[in-house]
Image (cartoon, rainbow, N blue to C red; front, side):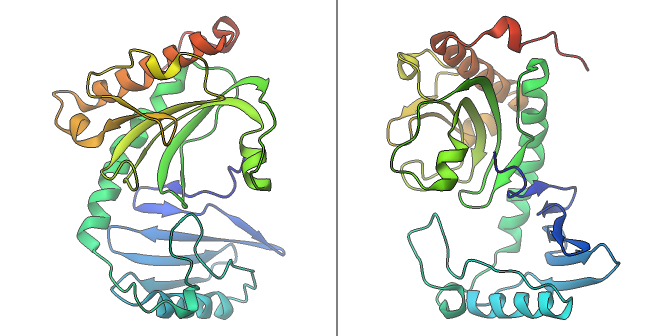
Length: 260
């Protein structure tokens, strides 16, 4: 429900996709091959910022200077969200690293995962999101909807209430953190159907993470499998089948023989 806001995979990294600004549009791209941040506008202007080690404060200042040079005036949240550290960007001189090799390896993983996530819902004809990357959690994901409203969420902000307004199932990959410290794939249903967490989701190394209310499959288990794409697809399909059957989704109406 916020599909205009996340990042999208490109052949070189990630993009915001076009952002409206007056009579123009602009896009901000992360090139994770040559390691540049590129800002391009619909009237042909381009500015680049090298992705190299520098403090967050310096990066923030230089990025705003690029937008200013292009005549782009936008409001940007001045501090991080969805992280434990809320130091304003302009004041953060603690974080100052950029590991280009690690960034490139992460991008290579996203390229492979993206292909499977795009094939996975091929036979699903209900409402489905594109495959996109949410910048808060850095998860590449796809979301499928039953078409039915969900119970109203209590205690969440406006963004969360809108995102969880309808029954859905989320499937994705993220680099890890918190209760899942290593890279992993995940699958969840909202609201969680009764018996879902006890379902026999495959392969055998899958575990249910109660703190996140989702099934988790270690990335390394998929990467080391004889056929990584098939191993990931088995996880996605078995979680989908377990959730839809227990939640009573109308699979006859929502599914069709997938085309190629």
